[in-house]
Amino acid sequence: MAIAAAFLWATYFFFVLGMTPGAAPSALMAYPFLIGGSCYVAYAAALGHGRVVLQLFREPMAWGRVGLIVAMQLSVLGATYTAGAVNTSLLSLLGDAAMTPLLAMIVLREGRHRARSPLFLGGLATATAGAALTILAGGNAGPFHGWALVIAPFVPLAVGGFYVLSAREGQKRPTSALVGQAVLTGGIVSAVCAGLLPGGWAGLVLASPRIVVLMIGLGTTSFFVANVLYFTAIARSGIILPTLFQVLIPIFTLGLAAVLLHQVPAFLGLLGIPIAVGGGILAYRGALVPAPVPPSEALLSEGGALAPDLPGDPEEAPLTDVRIP
Image 1: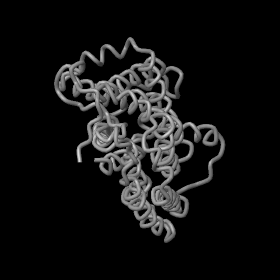
Image 2: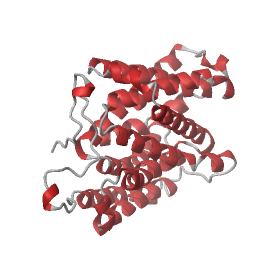
Image 3: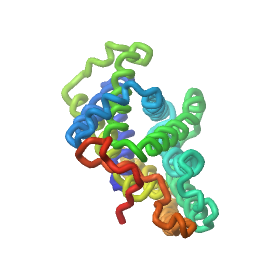
């Protein structure tokens, strides 16, 4: 599920490039949120969590997550335009594979024993380096300049912040409701504020049926299906392990660039792929080492799993962590 989510997120950049210049940035901000968020809220309602979605509109922290997901989308979209799809996939990699585990250890106190594992840390560093080599030596990455230098730091911070805060709240609330409310509200906020973006409110009028189809595809894949897969993976194994597989995002991006844009990477770019995969395997094996648990806490889980997205009243759902082997 985490690998499938990585692939779907890699397609984001090519959906955006495929709709340029037919769709204005204001439309690319608002519609994927609105489409994906509507699917997500319907999904939450089908699971019996519609009431939680309504409750979240009254909670300040829920609006904080909305702010983070809007910042994430705005920074990724801006970086795609100013730095290119390949560079942006590297920034997303830093958010997913590096910033998210770091914040999980600090904020959620999950997997802190892995910080003492040479196998985990070495594998994570190797995987990140291999993915970076795939991009930087692949011949498709360019230097950051102008607005790209301003936007770039916000991508990993927003990506890591949103997923960690969602995972923390998801320890006791269904993630279908949490993410659905954040994504849908992010779309509403983006539509209301469209006048501040290039294209303005007039840009919300889509130019052609082709753009409409691509926009629906982007909203349902990167903003709905990918998130469902990713957060389900987190629910089954905690937040650390699924983030490791996000090193595949730039690899998928490079492969799609070769197929769709006919941009064949250089040899060093290809060499980075097995390095990234090998590092990911090492980090995965290191992450599977269980934490030392005192005998009195032997029946308690490590923590970090999300509340299961099961049908029924959320108030009756168990609040303990659930791990499915």
